[in-house]
Image (cartoon, rainbow, N blue to C red; front, side, top):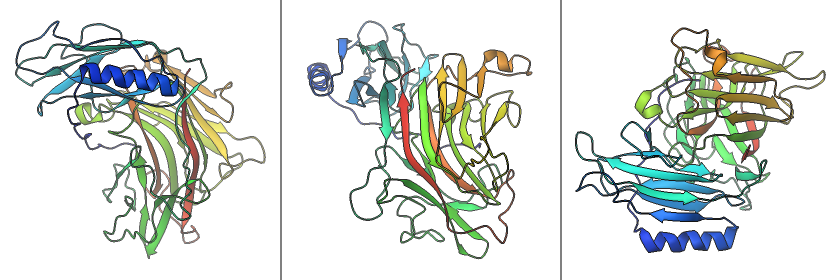
Length: 387
């Protein structure tokens, strides 16, 4: 998978200081979060006339927090560090809220392009969360009695029929889209009463295909941890389901410099043995350079329910199917050392999650006459655990 992604929306300004301290204290009481050990509104470095960013938080799960950086300066670019060092215009750029599940210090500045830099805002988090703890998830619960919209605080959409860099054939439809060939009466992405996220590939007219591509871009990102999806994929000629990540900096550096992590990816009909492929992509290593197939045990196919996971650590990306204690491949910086011009992108910032079902394209080819429509990619949950 590869293509450009739209930029995240800017966030509005919120009052800081004592109000934020009160909020952190309330979160600590209600969720067991250890909260902020210290908060410093800045004014230690930087030029006058630029307001320092605000650090806001909301609870995730089991004491983890989702951190948002906010600025009142419409043209400001925000940069931050997580190791307590003073950020500069060369530090990690902020694009969207990110998960914090370990003890660290966030420092952030606002930079006006070609102009001044604000003082630094700082907040220290002391989070005593054990390894293997669930810190974020979408369980796709639905008690409405009818099809429900995937959580709009978590999921947004790519839409259209541009081919997405892969010569794909489908029109991606967002929830509620009535732009033909999308049909809100027959959604391509919905949470069913069965508690599963459904991504449906449809053929509303001969040779016309619709599907969905959901993403957390601009809403939720994370760096490091164990990411897992429990899913069941459709298997037929022309289908290309995937669960993958892109660096949140893609709007600034483009693909492949942003990095891409493919956790679940397979095409076409079931084989014997059946398989899933886990890949990584970045500058100097795209295409088939770093992709490894996992072959299911005899009698199993990807059409059954399986958990597909990634264990992401500094300098390392490992993939597993069903058993996190036995990754089938681990990629490290040494994996790309022999590839000319290669740059490891997975330690430079957070990434967002993508779920999609492509129809046709450069890998699977076109659907066949026997390819069934509608067909569905079913997702039971998406979860993030601490390493």
